[in-house]
Length: 462
Ligand code: UDX
Ligand code: ADP
Image 1 (cartoon, rainbow, N blue to C red):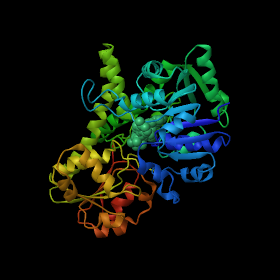
Image 2: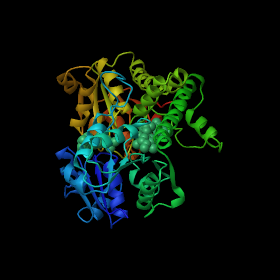
Image 3: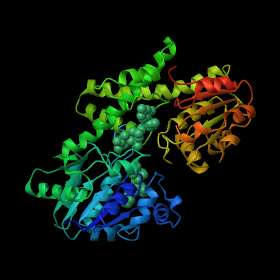
Image 4: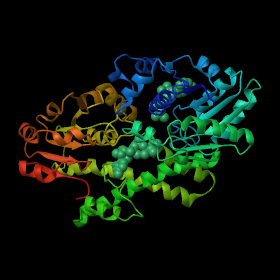
């Protein structure tokens, strides 16, 4: 039975996942390591509201397990040395250089981990891929481990994480399924069983699916591609709804009641964001192209094309509705995170809408309940569209929605935070310039009520 686990990478996946394993398995010592000292300090902070990842329920899990059998450290070598099972949960961003630039996953952090494990390991280890990886990465990791290691045995497992941010803890407590891929050899099957035994501490064994490594790796990319495709499909219909007088919420409901389609992931929006959907589809497109499967590649690429269009279309609509100019006008953004209940902003639609509006010389005022100024400026600077000074000048960040909206020409809702629904909208209306516009990029506000107050309300797909 496994007694010592380490996880390399204390991010949005590694942190919450390991916290839950530790909480559910008090007999296993779980050490989460990261090169980033600030991140580790934040995970060790006595004030649980300052953990580096915001997830509902995460603070309670960390409070229970941390210091008991859950540890956060920057001593990567020591953790590798002591662990019987090592999860790799480092970032695999889209490549920004060389072959596969803008499409393929950059595996340099994975390779560095593999080399470090090979160098340190003096006893047999099970290495678990937690990060989403292109198909056949396991064989690359195995190559490195076997050719540079100290002669110990490594088993590589693929165990993709399906949690969604914002609901990570509930997803981890009751996953639809846990997927574990491994070698079909007896040693591979033994390693699979050892990981099954870890999850079986709280997951019904019927929900633990075992496959070969390649199926497991490809299933993760496929699941994300299918989910993103549903969002792009409903977003495509939202534009048609706007032209024809149909209402996309009604269309979603009508089709979602078909049990073959189902109701989830049919919410039209300003566009999907997050660290996974775009990256994984680009990766899928790259893999398909590399096998010469151009039709397969083109098919999936359209999901991204549609999503980019949806973000751009939203910004254009704001400009055209505001009499074709937003130059010098204050536009208040409610929300910056890529979805509610997370402080993660990676690929958030808000970044791209802001970038377009800044190109139109708008003044943007942002309020997000969990995202602060430094992250917002970082996200804009990362695009490299203009200088840091220009971004600072164009975007002001507020710690209160009412101040952000004060004297604004328009409000744009970019994230579906629940608190936005409960605001005193009359008070906000009174403080704005007239006519006061609201562009609801998440269809969360009551348009009829807002119109009664006097707002000009525009949702998505209606
Ligand atoms: C996703 C997958 O759901 C998860 O299984 C995988 O492990 C990682 O990628 P995540 O990116 O955290 O999770 O959030 P998700 O809930 O999937 O939302 C992704 C984006 O799609 C968000 O920007 C969300 O606002 C948007 N979305 C989702 C919609 O616009 N409409 C919907 O109906 C659903
Ligand atoms: P995810 O959303 O997949 O968890 P993140 O970017 O939030 O991705 O987290 C990945 C973490 O992995 C980062 O905190 C980064 O510092 C860490 N990391 C990357 N490479 C290494 C490495 N070689 N050793 C330790 N930590 C690493």
